Structures are given as structure tokens and as C-alpha cells.
Length: 569
Image 1 (cartoon, rainbow, N blue to C red):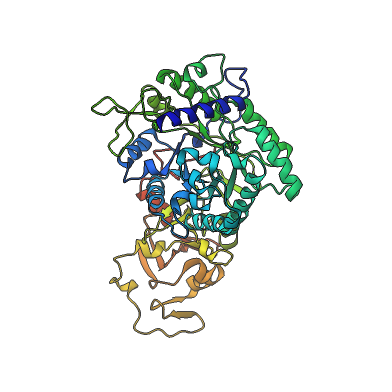
Image 2: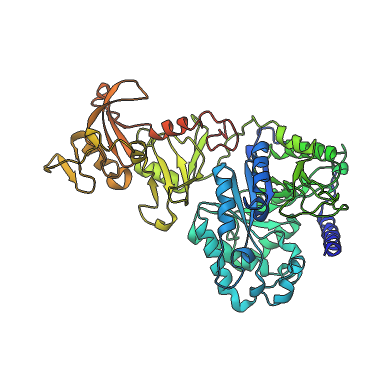
């Protein structure tokens, strides 16, 4: 098997070199307006190694030490549906949850065909043969569609997906099949989450994507290409000692620029993800090549993410040529063996170069339709969250955005995509898509008053008599009256604030240090400000979310992966 792996690696390398555009200058010109994109400090990874039950106790601490901001990670059909109709999500649940808890953004890559869905089942079952022998049985296309729906629905809080990995390398994707499958993935994913980003994958770069554009326009019409982003692997010189020379580019900058220009030519906004890049060879030279690459990548505003391939070496044997930031520690016999007992050690100075690369810059806000930029906090709102902000509130009822959208774990262990504003944490509920409940404010009122149920204002009323100025709510045993009632009705009512969970009472406002008349609701705290009586600011919502994330230490952030990290200035 090892000899076959070396043969496959040689063939792959030859194909890669054939696809590369010769380099001509050491570092391409920078975009002078861009300073530093914090999202280029990503790692390309695989779930089975990041699994906490395999090497997670070594590799997750390494991701923390390296301050990795995003991980591009495969979600393989052959692994989550190993037999027809038998779904096993346990590994992906473990890995995705660990990444989300660390605020590491996930770029999910839907990939592979299970042996049972292939025309050649025997060949497809051999991992080393899958790119040659796996071909989807056309009679099982509904199973392919179902696998897409299952994966995207289960992980609806992941809003960035790449379809396939280097499709040019798969024998049965070399004609029109990839575009057909990509169309299927794109349409199904958009039905599940219309705001999802779908990336077309390429190793060859401009020639392949140009061909996809041409065929897509013929098949689907101009402007209907089934991707939002192009994911590219711009391997330059594979050998780090070559890429470290002054006269050689570390990456295929020419291919990147041509992809940008191609997207503009076809009327698309240029958006690129560099989901793999890297080198093998001398560790010091790898560090020099990495510095050159990051110096360029961070200054290209159309490059949204970049992922070094990869965190650790993954091929066995003394003659392997791997690109990892960490090396396998030989066992007691001096052999490099990849099994459950393998230990990894950083390759210095390559590892340190990634870890210590400066990340204190920001980049200017890219003008984009449907995106609103808030200069006071350096964050944006878009899509369903911006729609909620505009329809159900404003600065005084919702406040400014304090974070980017990020996944947040719920009490039952599930995850929701949320975005924090000063007064509201907006939650995206994909199961309620298309209804007025698709975006809801989190139950922050209940969360922060937990344990106060026996205090007088929070006790359910023994009696409540409704009249023209007072409503009674049997659901919580509380009432709502006068100015707070008017505000509740005028600004969204039950869908916006939930039920009252207290009566009106006086309480010290932690933000002003003054006593205010307040009332708690499931999703808010109403505050009466007598000094502003007669103005639109007489009733305000408490800054509950800002207080919550300040208590967590998120403001100011201490890491570029933190959701409150200021992306723009």
C-alpha cells in the first residue's frame, strides 16, 4: 500500500505541476488600500484526525496556540452514510462542536461517493482508488440528493460550503458531471438556507473555471452559474526551498488574479477562497515561503479565506514529503507510523512563523449590495439579520452589531447561527424559514433573571384584571400596562419581545448607575428614562447582550478568531 501511495503522490504531483502557471516575480503587487485580512490564517483539515477521540487532545491545542481563525474541513458522504440509509454523524458532531466552541469559522467541504453508490463498488471501496473508480450510479441520484439535504440541514448553522475537492482529479468529473452535481448541490443548499455561500472547487484554476462558466451560461443562462465563490488551490512551487527564493513566487499569484478577472468578466463579484496552499521541504524555507504568501494574501480584499494545507504530516515512511506544520514523532523503533498512538511535534521555524505572524491589522469595508456597515463597532449586518434590524427595530431597540454571525451552542447541545447586537442576540431558526419567526431574539431576559423567580416582581400574580390599559398573560402570570404596553405593541409584541416575566419595578441600571423603572420580558428588559420623557427615547431596551459578552471578556477581543474582532475600520 505504501508503494501505491508513493506512486499516487508522484502522479498527483505531475498533474499539479502541469496545471501551474509559471511564476515570474517574487511577490505580486499589493492592494494598497487593504491592510490585513484576519481571515487568511486558516488551516485545511480532516475530521478524522481532529476527532477528539483520535488526535484531538494534541491538535485542538495546536489550533489554539496558532490562533487559527478558520478551518476548511471535509464532510464526506462515504463516512456519514457508510451504508444505504444508515447515517452516522457522531464524528462530525464532535469535531464541528469543538471548532465552534473555539469560535473557529468552518468552511465545510461536501465530498466523496460511498462505495455502495458507485458503478464500480469494488474499486470505489479502496481509498487509494476512489478518485479513479468512484462514479455515482445514476439510479442512485436521489440518494445523492438526500445526502446533500441531510448534511446541509443538520449543519444549517454552517453558512459556507465548498462542493468537492479538486474535481479535475476525479476521473468521472472530467466532463460535464461536476457542473451537473454542483448545480444540484447549489439548488438544494439554497432551498435549505438561501443565504448560504457555495463555492466551486478547482485545482487547475482559470482554465477550468472559465470552462465551467462557458458551459453554465449555455445550460442555465447568463448570471445563473451555480456558485457564489471560487475555491482555489494555487500551489506555486511545491518545494519550500524553491518558493523561498527571491525569484520564485510562493503561490500561483497569476492564477489567482486571472480567476478574479474572470469572475468580473462574467459579471460576478470576485470572491475567492484559497482552501489549500502549501509546500514541502526544508522547514526554514517553508517559513520564508509562508511569510511571502501571507504578506500577499492578506492584502487582497477579494480573497475572503485562506487555508494552509495542513496542520500536521499525514503520510508514513522515511521518504515522505509532507507539508504539515507539525511532524510525526518516530516510535521506539524509529519509524514514523500514523496510528492512535502517534505524537506530533512542531516543525520549527515553520510552525512558529504561522503562530507569530502579526495579526493586528484591519481592512477597509468592501462595498457590497445588501450589506450595511456600522463604523462605530466595525461590524456589518446583512441578509436576514439586517432585515430583522430594519423591520423590527433600530439603534434604540436593537442597537449596533457587536459581532459577526457565529454559531452558539444551545442548552440541548444543538447549535444556532446568531449575531449579537447591543440589545438583541438574533438567532436564525432554519426550521422556521419563511415565517416571521425565522429570526428570533434569544431568551436573554429569562437567562439573566434565572434564580430570581422568588423575588416579588417575578412572582406570578394571584389575580390580574385586564382593561383598556392593561393586558394579562396567563402563560407567565404577569401583566403589561401603560407606556411599556404601548411600546411592546408598537415594536413587535410577542414575536419580538416574548411574554412579560416580571411586573414593573425599580432597579439599579448597571449601565447608568441610576434607579430606573424596568420590566423584564423573555427577550428584553424595558427601561423607563424620565429624563427623556416626551421623546422617542423615553422607553429603551437594556443593553443586555452587550453586558453579556462583556462579562465573557469578549470586549475588547484578545484574538482575531473572537466574534467581536473588529474586521474593518
